[in-house]
Length: 202
Image 1 (cartoon, rainbow, N blue to C red):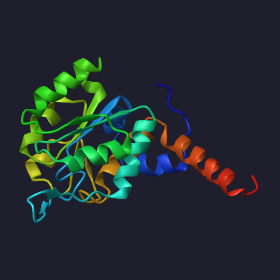
Image 2: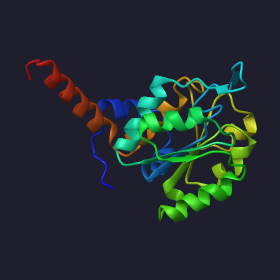
Image 3: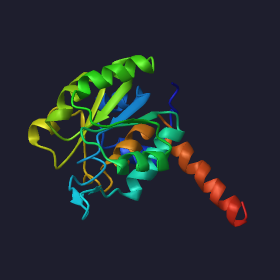
Image 4: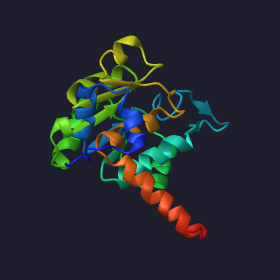
């Protein structure tokens, strides 16, 4: 993949705070897997009067996941729990790889790699707890959230500064897109589309 020699200002801003090794890992990614509870949500579980679980998602994260998917990086959800809310959120974002009730995430990641004909160093995983640890050790790019236990964050190549369920996944998506030289193009194309739609002079 050819990355522009002169990055977009937004990309330069993001990458200035990222070690070279992490940039290179992110640049190789063709698939990014996200845990749900404690990564895409704040980890809290809300139960309705009939026992159903309610989860809160953040629009910032959703748009980041959509950008990543539309830019050519496959996005997958992988969670140890099962909830129709997760399937619904994935459908809203156009994400087809949704694996729920997964206890052995290491094996599941390996199976995903084989099914998509990917090397493990082309896959990233963002997790926050022990169930995610083996998968994080397995992939080329391991990400986590600041609220995770220290032995999880120490296993990660990169840790988000924004909170879980409140922009951490978006921060991760922006990093990947910036490392691949795709964020600037996405920003420019969206700005052009908005101008054209509003009838503003170009």
